[in-house]
Length: 295
Image (cartoon, rainbow, N blue to C red; front, side):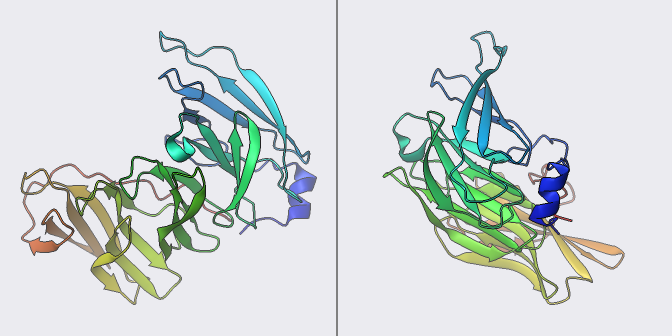
């Protein structure tokens, strides 16, 4: 659970998790091409104090791959109360107009504010998930614009946000209950529409565990579920079991002290047929689920 805002202010927000190798976690640098020279730059957010004047320390990347010394930009947060300054975010070209925006939020933001900074100035505030554990990107509808997804254990939610041609952020097609801060998942185009879909293992409160494919433009296919998540858990991964160039779904079920492997071959349009598990499966493609918890 989050600490109360008063206590957070008193300790100066010093409860900082170390950065991991995954994008969009709190206190982690944001990697993205901010000056549109084709090279990924690195942005560090700050400060972690009680001021509403926030900083961006940007290291632009040289042609040889090294980073230049940081350039500091400041902006005034429009948020009405602490935490004023974001501590996580992503770099996204909203609307595809050639300008990379920073979309920022805070681990302890109860309102779910998403600040959009264009050329290092706040241009919009949108509604995201409250108390986010992570914020990340993928193109869910195949329109060539990079969309956003967020997850959190505090309000048990995973949702997607769509990047529109009008350079706005609107709710996406996926909004599901998910208790794990960053749930086990794999992203792939399972239905052939050019967008990314979620192969997701989720737990909803203490009443449901499920392995399913959630399509980026809406709809889902459930591969397995149980109403006893304390007794059974699922691990999912994407692979190509029959070598046809189409992503398939792998599922490992853990019940008690035993595990069972199941393979689901994909038609290419998001129709899955279970086949006998192969003795030697292709490498797993999955994501972390251990970081970003709120205690």
